[in-house]
Image (cartoon, rainbow, N blue to C red):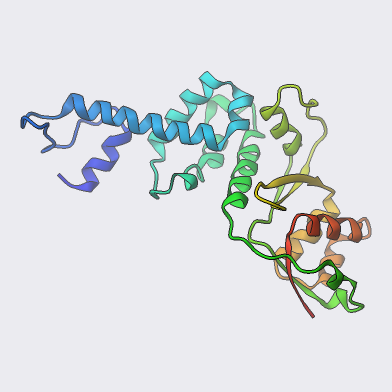
Length: 241
């Protein structure tokens, strides 16, 4: 029996137990393997429940469990670290016919992944806010914390995410929405930001100087507001002129 035979059989109920797998009495371990296989699928499904609570809230617990089981069987883990499991879930949602009428689900899943990534990101010490008072600020290159994330969606993704977590949240309205993810303390925070601010942050992420980022953002940018938000989120960790 090889790992190549054993691993695929763990998540596919149509696959027979690997040849050569026996129980303590030397008999084919069919029934024992089925129990183990079911436990693996249940465990991975629970990992998705933990990782995507808003998706579960939006589609309902029963449907989510069935959908997650389908995902688990098509996308077995590639890492022993369960906190990383589910990276393919947004793409899966985009191609899963039963949720084709809910096209925003993939972006909600991306937001949940970004929040998870921020939670597990390395620590970084933010700069002293006084450093932003330099007269040559526009010539600076900014270093951002590893926990920072930016999601740009064609849907009101932040509002939909909140609705998935809390049925009493305001109903999602409007169209495209950009969301900044920061980690000011131990827990990540998702904050909707205006398009101009998202253009600015995206440029900084790409390594642009503040001057170039301002040009990309356009005249609608409130520079003080986005810099304040970044500082409050502990997201600016370096400033080089």
